[in-house]
Length: 453
Image (cartoon, rainbow, N blue to C red; front, side, top):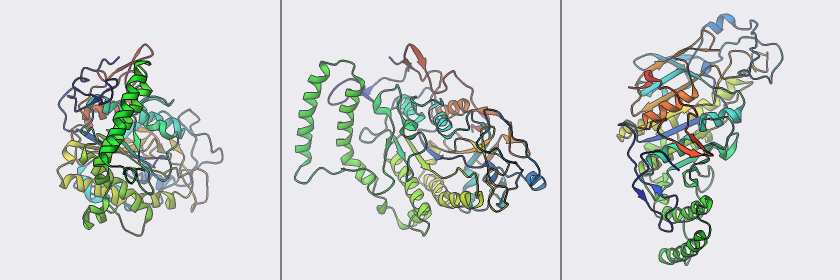
């Protein structure tokens, strides 16, 4: 039973009234952002080597580093540890002169639209549990993803498309599909993953010889049988979700093929995203970013774009260098494209990994092969779009990047803030499950107000 006051005015399923699809519910409060694109960097990108450089490490380079043996420190590496400087060069960009890795050539041109946040802390250094925490508010898996919560509160903007879409990399992130589960929320709110290679969705067209009218008649007959079956099993959530999935799949055949046609985009737009270049990873990520824009433009409420490969325990210069080159044009193209189309004002864009990395040498001592360990005590994220400050740096880490020290907040406060930017109050967005009122933050949190415009 929901206690969310926004869940009124349902678009009823054509087959059955249980678990109806909510269409454009009123937010809890006025907000600029109406939709979200969440760029998930799986593996834990190093803040020290991307957007939070630490010159002090040049002085401390190869001096002994004392490993913090707590639950916030990865225990996989037990050899001698040394502070190591970043192998990358940094430059200032934008009116504020925000320092970032020089490999961000394209992204450095849009920093005046970005709010960098350096005060966030995670609570796990284990990849699956940290990813679950970032995506669902708990470390255990099985709870609703933030995209499901957003769709639960705001509903769908287009009943012919999934409200929550996930665009994975070549493989699923650690923890798998539980990262976009609907948990105990109605099953139709779970994320819909598209394929990263080949056709994004299979069977978009009906079989040869089956007209749309014939297909609709078949589905209507199936619906009548499902109604009879469901009358014998009232309150069967999975059955209702299955019925709705059939109906959504039929409706998607009308609109989704047009959304997926990236080739219809002008050449200069595709090139802006890094599509068609020699770097296959950049081409793949750019396509996912462009598809994210097309999805939210068509009415999808929440899109998550995943880029893997950030777990650089060694050879961070090669590994992070390749990752930065792979995403640089895609993230810059997304911001530019949204802005020139007038979509950035009411679209929230978020870039985040599951944790940061430590200022030491990781596995290797050799200066040509060092990496960095997991670090939950400090991480950098950035936001852009509706309701977010532009061209700003909020929060700070200490001189080595080991600890967040200014505007320090846990992940639950970050979740509360993201919901707020979308017009949702975490304390009102609740669902009764197993005798308890559940919410994304679990026990409530506070807004990170300096991030707000």
